[in-house]
Image (tube, rainbow, N blue to C red):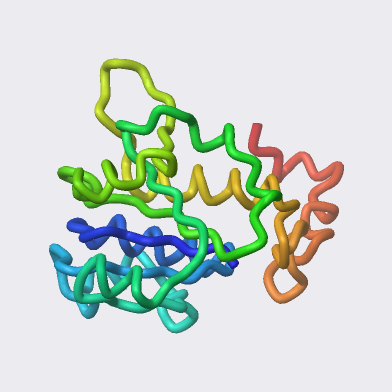
Length: 180
């Protein structure tokens, strides 16, 4: 199972977007306190949109409480990582995968990172930015893991419960609906 871990998130809109991503990919979300917002905040729910009721998440008082309860392979995403997240072969893992992302302002506590150097990974960027937006990072790395695992349990076409796989067929040859 894929797990997304947010270490002391600060911005409710980012966490709301990540909640929506977790619902889309079937991942469990772990939130490590303190957080810079309350879970009942309107901005958080607005970002999660209509998916709030489907979110599988748990809140922990601190990092130690999280590690005591969750066993598996941890991947820390940090600008200090010496390897890129896409270098790892996630197919080789036979236990739960935990992608751990730090708070927007300072990341994961440096002492935690230093004690897990072999598990620190980086998203490549130029030298002009410190990092990407947190919710973008989560989506980017989570989908790389899922791509390598051949998107387990994810639907590859538009489900019939929404528009359906053949939705665009109705627009074939229809010049009035051409949006080029």
